[in-house]
Image (cartoon, rainbow, N blue to C red; front, side, top):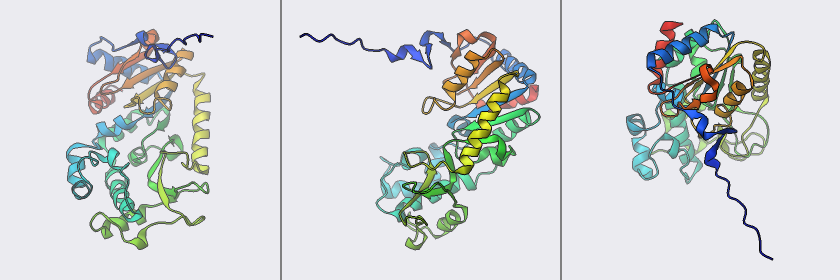
Length: 311
């Protein structure tokens, strides 16, 4: 019996349930885009900020270029430039020992979590939203929102924190503050390795520890993580009946199901909500949103500064 050939689905025609042709780069002068965005934010009762990796990159916390080669030259020399191309790629290197793994990650955490101050972009953003009912949903793990003054109770960092560690196999639902440990490792590191006695072990199962980053099925969602998720849900319920702005910062297509796609869905289903999308290269927005969507490309730090001057 001849089998019928299944029709192949062209997934390029869909994005978050919306036909691809509905997405446009707005043909509007920059000044008018900023003015429209500032009006939307002024009129909003609630502001939901969704921040991805592009926000911290725009703030200056880049993972490549001179910031990488200048801070990680010894790792590049030891493990090779083929693998050590940037801080993100370096994190996936198959380090041969625990001493090597923590040699890298302690350095990474110091450079991206503990040593940087609150960056101007984040401080300017705080000045813009601090008088509003706001909430922060972020996939970033560098603690910049907390440093800039945003209330911890109004932040849901879904993917972890560079300052915490957990059991590698997630044997128990608890995370551990590693700041003191990482600072000690940073001082003791030699030839990209930390001393064996500094290698952390799980206090429950005795196994290896890992960074508290969502990279596999063992990511620990502890009690505080769930409390943050609950506060985010409560904020969404309150915003349903108010005029709100969803301010999306530097969210690409690495993990679009956490911020980018849900934000579009919320705006599509609630006429009281508007979307402001700031993105270096992916500032495309649904044309069907009309005046309820503003997509601004280019230098996000400049856009945030210009918005702050108008609000």
